[in-house]
Image (cartoon, rainbow, N blue to C red; front, top):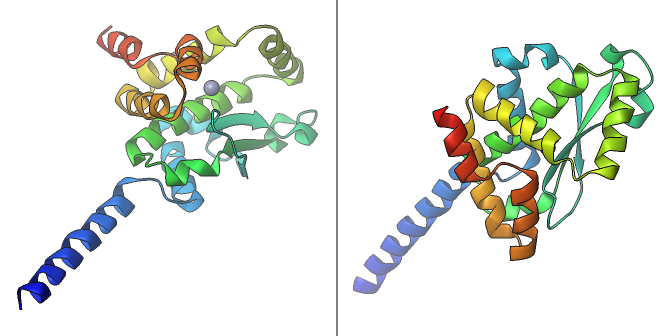
Length: 191
Ligand SMILES: [Zn+2]
C-alpha cells in the first residue's frame, strides 16, 4: 500500500516539476520566435516591426546568439533586406530561462534596429571595424539601449548570469570585456 502511495507521490512531484521546467525554460525555436514577435510589438521596435528575419541554427559553445544581415540582400533597397538571427541549438538543453532569453533577444533586435539605420557602406564599415577591434564599444552601446531605452536590464542580467555559467573562466573574462556585466547593468539602471 505505502509503495503505491510513494509511487503516486513520486509521479505527481516529478511530472509537475517537468511541467514547470517546460514552462520556465526555452525549449525550442518556436518559443524563441514567439518571444521575438512579442518584442517586436514594443514601440521602440516600431521601425523593424515588418522586417524579414531568418532563423539559423549555428552550433557553438561560446557564441549562443548573433544578429546579421543576409549578404545577398545587403546591396539592394533597405526595405528588401533579410535579417539573420543565429542561435546555438545547445541553448535548448541548458536551462535558459524565458526572462534571460527575452534579455538576449532584445539585444539582438537592438542590433537589427541599428542595422536598419545603416546604409550599405555603413554596414561594411561596421564589419571592418569588427575585424580590427573587439567590438567592445559597439556591443556596450547596444547593451545600453537594452537597459536604458528598452528597460530590460533585469532580463539582460539574467542572461549574462546564465552565460557565465556556460563558459570557462577565460571565456567569461572575454565576455566581461566586450559586454556589460550584471554589476555594470545595475549601475546603469540606477542612473
Ligand atoms: Zn551584440
